[in-house]
Image: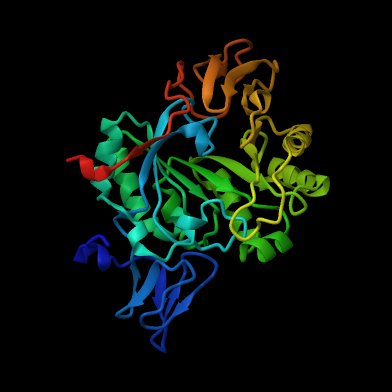
Amino acid sequence: MMKITDQEQDYVGRWWHKQEDGRILCTLCPRACMLQEGQRGFCFVRQNIGGKMVLTTYGRSSGFCIDPVEKKPLNHFYPGTSILSFGTAGCNLGCKFCQNWNISKSKEWDRLTDQASPEKIARVAKSLGCRSVAFTYNDPVIFAEYAMDVADACRAQGVNAVAVTAGYMTDESRPEFYSHMDAANVDLKGFTEDFYQRLTLSHLQPVLDTLVYLNHQTNVWFEITTLLIPGENDSDQEIHAMSEWIMANLGPDVPLHFTAFHPDFRMTDHPHTPAVTLTRARNIALSKGLRYVYTGNVHDPQGSSTYCYQCKRRIVERDWYVLGEYHIKNGCCQYCQAPIAGHFEDWPGTWGAKRLPVQLSEFP
């Protein structure tokens, strides 16, 4: 097990209030965990130590890897560029279908194999040519203070900060967290309260509140991902309702990704999502007026490419994570000059589909 410095072990977090009976109330996420001395929250990484909320994973990671930014997925945030990805341990949701359960459900600190200060992460990302750093694998909300410090260090190096999150936060914590982020991908896991309660042990409304907040009160670029699980959240009725809500509350320009489920964790009894289900969902969302709808976790060059909403021509070709033709200049379609929502350069990145593990301990 790696040695943890006193500073990291004793990192006092934000968003908690001491109660008259000596317990502390965590106000980071809607769970509102009430902790006695020594107790940990549902997320397992926030603990009452000495009457204070301590973030026990500050400065510790489950590992670093360079990915294509499209893997987050972000299709409208500097396409083709590389992104240094990392997470910690724990999660504030209890998804029975978790695809990263060995990290997000981990309570074994020896899984946290890499250790780095925010400044070192930013420096290494810059030296490796990464356009961005992503907080992913588990939800950055639960290690928000660490993520925010890394984001600040990255901005000082000209590197973007990206949160890949379920968006399960409170009105109290949301503004400060997102003031440090440049982009986000928010998992909208379903569109019924029953689904959220039964399969994620959480609630839908706080996630919708996060999406509305991002859209109306920040400049954070964000995209939405919904993992479609056969028989659970893939009905026409639910996809119609979700698409209509996005159109009415967020507008037509927020990219929406429908991705395929594979049996994992506590839902190995469900089948893989058929590609036809993703295509059907994409067509429904497009029919509601959403301009940028994608399929993921399946080989679907048409469903993963970007099309101009005005002239309907393909402007970013994608085959998995490999980019082909690219027709965006000055943020507009080169064919008809319609503005394309997002952050684009005149030339895409060339990272491709590579996935490169990185050991920060190898860098000075």
